[in-house]
Length: 539
Image (cartoon, rainbow, N blue to C red; front, top):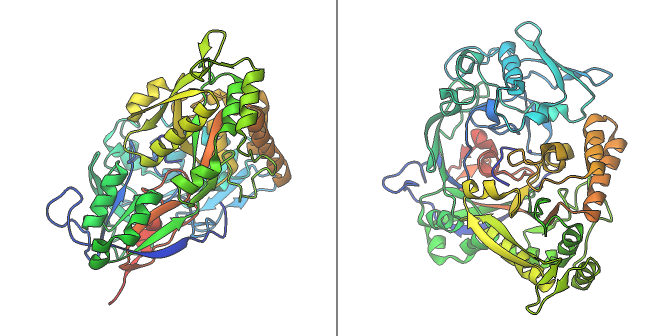
């Protein structure tokens, strides 16, 4: 899906292997050094950038914002820890009240003090009907949030919401700045002020975001004084700039990350590491209900077993991932055993035959005058999505369904999502509610990039509500098992792969590591999720 700043599981360990690459001193945009190679600076290449830097509009909502802090944060094992809160919350016996004592002495980067009023302002503003925050429904459980003096906040919930504490990694905005502006278009959306370890210095849209260390950060001034994120949408270009030394690190697809291992020119330049992060990130194909072909349940079921997921993992991901049968990875305790779908082209053809989709002279099926054909869009410059789209189209053709792949920007794709299939993505490790409710709930059909397929299944809607409104782990597990089993009977999406994120980073610092990662990565996640705690290696 489009980059959504959308995200606990413990025990995450990253597989790390040594490869060779380049680390020199040039600017991501060309010209003189802008930090790459400098002892106290880092320049990394990412694939996407946010639409806004305001947490009131969704930026950083799943943690790891460099500009802001939430009440809580995640550690390396995705366990919650205090941030702006002094401790983890006190939860009432009925699960309806969460009380957070606040850390004292914290200041925003403009020198003004942080307090309870800022927390109240942030959450109430996001929930305000006038605020254009696409993730507003994630805070649906909140009935009210109030200040208890200057040093505590109390959340009252409408219903017990088991993962509520996970929602409070959401960054806190300063009322004294953002409160006096238009929440949707004010200066704060591009020139934010927060309590975080870094301060934004420049944002050249489509090019880079530059940060400097916050000397008054409550957690201590970072050793990496300058941090730049170069926005490079094209995978090949990102790899080229990393190899040339313009970057200290980059997000790369498996085939390009692998290329650094045998790059002789890179070996001569210096050592780099490749970090492989386990993720909940999946790639899937939306099957819009509004299209006469993809809206047919028989076509959906056939496509779901006509795709050779094992081949996708082996050939496209080079083993850096696993087959996906739904939003939950097979290794997760939330995965519903028995919902794996083996590749079965013969059964796919039988399903289509029985449903009246008859092959024509060219091998493409038709039913009642409707040809079994539809377009599949993927985002330009994203080689991994392109490869997934082409492989899916190839497998579909073997079953007698013609899929025409098309590429474009999200601005081109979004207006077509009602009827055209999209090579999309998603996934959040924090809690099964986080991704599934937005992706599968019929009430959110057509709501921006939520429920892109306009999937409508009453049994799934019921289970999603049970899963988010119960505090009983057994009830929640049963609910999400139901969702996954319903997706076998009526897929709204064909889930293809879960992808390990790969990063190539100059081996100059102590501290880089990875967490279990969500779909969206590069800006808030990656080896630089904790860049504020990195220390230069001493030679």
